[in-house]
Image 1 (spheres, rainbow, N blue to C red):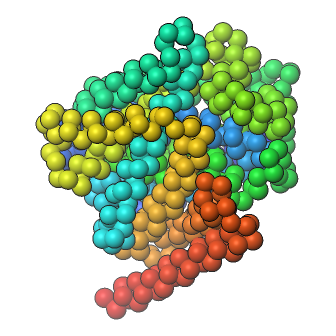
Image 2 (cartoon, rainbow, N blue to C red):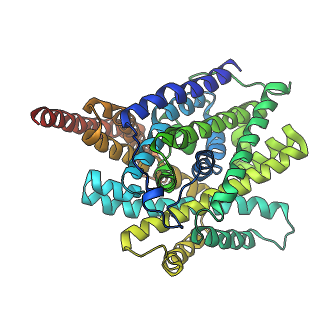
Image 3 (cartoon, helix red, strand yellow):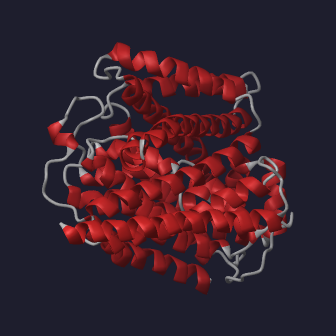
Length: 475
């Protein structure tokens, strides 16, 4: 319990102290934001800060901080450390920078920002990569809620039926102006997600049947998966997620002041990490260890495991919260995934999005592709989603590093993104080389290759940092 309470306290301190450091590095000012200068009544429009925080939370969270945290908890309470420090030093910085840099570039997507700050080849690669990630994300957040609803409704209402229903909702949410569905419903569902986590935390504190283990560095995964790099990829959204770089531009189009960015982008990520921390603790405490937790996830699936925890700990109210959490929350990330994909394709094709026809022409093929992907195995989808997530986070952090080298007051300020970018570079390459869905190479080869890759990128960063420092000194 001491480890859990300490981890919560560090997350709060991280927002207060490190969040302010990130804000100082970026240096927000009083310029007008795209919500004011480019208001189109569809994607660009002012949103009050408290609503923007809750919308951003729903956009980036879904069931990510629940499912990822539970699967990450199979490694043991060591996962607490990654959730806390991964979020403060990596994930929240990533979200803040990607959101604020987008805001400085008229709400541009991460693909367009990659092209501007890393070069034309990065633009084309990231257009394809980010759209594929968003399709995977949207599909993951169709499949999991559809499975749970099908299990709670009559047999005639199959998983396939609920997939169609959810895709119809996605069609509406992707096409409608952001204030019509997302702006009205997401703040409410954001509060529900927070209440759900607070209720579970209360159960852990006050119910005598559950004990949260203290942090240990031992690898407790029943399948003997190594902590490095598998835990860092499995947790995904609860610590750092490239998916967030595709979502932050939506609120970058809606915030009314740059000085509110820390609350909206850095703050929402810290809230998500608190939720992830609660669910990681709940997983190991409820099942009494990693072996039974892993068995429950493997046998019953993520959604049913969440439902079992909530229903047992909190009774019928917990069951209702679980249904809302694992049905509505993923759906609210899935629809914004498709919406972000539409916006990236609109930038790519130049197709006007103010008119309904333009939005429809891009949305229909996206949802069609998502419908096809729902036929794949969820666990396989999640693994590819998780790796794509962390790889996009790596790229987004290098984009932010390039931006800071050009615009920060001092070049060494860019270390705030360069260091986590280097770390995530090692994680991403090591994972895909080792994993079964990757190249299945031996750990000895994968570890060395990952370290060399990260070291090479950091050396390139140092080269450009020195060159930039000399260039600024000569001016």
